[in-house]
Length: 122
Image 1 (cartoon, one colour):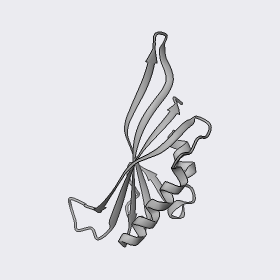
Image 2 (image 1 turned 120 degrees about the horizontal axis):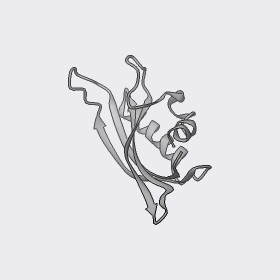
Image 3 (image 1 turned 90 degrees about the horizontal axis):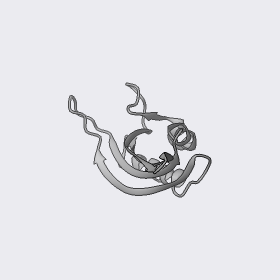
């Protein structure tokens, strides 16, 4: 699933997309993806191979407009996708935040999107 989502976001934010955290010094705009849950399905024979995962996608920008534009591009690239092991990608929620950093003042903006991904175990 991670590889498929990464490939689908190749044209978003100039291809700057990372899992868990962006490298220090990465210039905005960029996208950071985090797996939140992965609920696996079982039947009487054991694992069915079906998984429903929640992924949080944080879109960072130096301005609110830049972060929002990146979020719109993410939605456009992912909403309703069905391809290969991805059985369906659905936008669940979207939130606007300052890009908080506990150790220093951060002037970046962040739009957070939660998606639900129905997929086959890989």
